[in-house]
Image (cartoon, one colour):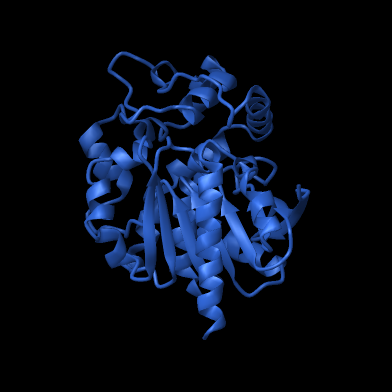
Length: 323
């Protein structure tokens, strides 16, 4: 199996840790929450062996990458700035980008802000959702689900961090990563965030005790404030993105959903994707697939995801070679 190597890259005023494997056209692999580069352990070797340079960074605030203290330093523009700096540091003009969860948001943002840097986008769990004039996702979904919704709970400085420490990192990570619940994570009145975590937390073949230990060590090192600050920057990102209201993605895209993923069951999500909304806002969408999976699709269904990724990447390479 191809070796995964590690190094640090200076970008946009921070030191970014990256894991990488292989050589060839560059593919950025962007993780979400609660996560770090290790989420792509099944994809890095597969992409490398297929002739790609796979690069999985720890996003700012996560893993071994620097974590600025202020929440306002975690907007989409800060993170895209990090990614553009990374692309430049890698010595390439443009890349393919793959993202999961928040990493999907970052991937779409990179394609939106700097389409010249992106050859194509594949996202897992989270499709492109254009900025709406009526408010951010925090505002719109929060109005429907109330103050108990976890994203609302995350807005309170220090509260989520203290709750996850109280219940313990292993319990928090197991229940979050291994959840198969499709119900929104809403804290009932009178209960605390940590007590209302969803999921059973039963280890599996694709997420073992060893994998859990790697996650625990990563979050013990990084802490939780940096990762949660991405949620606390949602409103600032929405304000800064005003020029991109209802903007379309102009690069080729592909979307992978999980039938047991909580995101797929957000009201209106399936209608948006299946009814043509995603294709409208991503005109070069090559298609979408719904796998029998929970939220962490690239881990639970790694072989299928790898096949889909390689199919998209190789087809796009062929298309671009004709230009």
